[in-house]
Length: 118
Image (tube, rainbow, N blue to C red; front, side, top):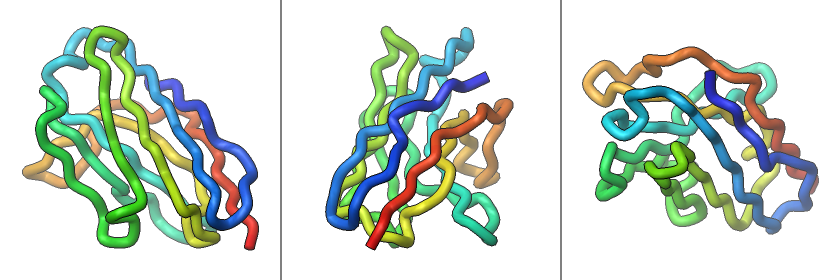
């Protein structure tokens, strides 16, 4: 299962870099995504990146503030979040992602908690 890290408590306007290691044989061929689950809300897609790293997509709520990247040699995917807002608070997860269905395809890890104070 994925192992996420890098979360923490930050003030609004700050930055965090989240990292995920997903040591699965098909990592190189999978689109990978970051999701978040905010308090009282369902888990939502934040960003995804295709297998080669050449194409990315972002949720409207984070566009311009977030960058997703991957290192296939290390089987890691990262999420850089700048200008953090209180609405970014939540548990962040990474997973394999199928664009056509809009669904995660692998098992879920523990996630990493991001808390943004105003």
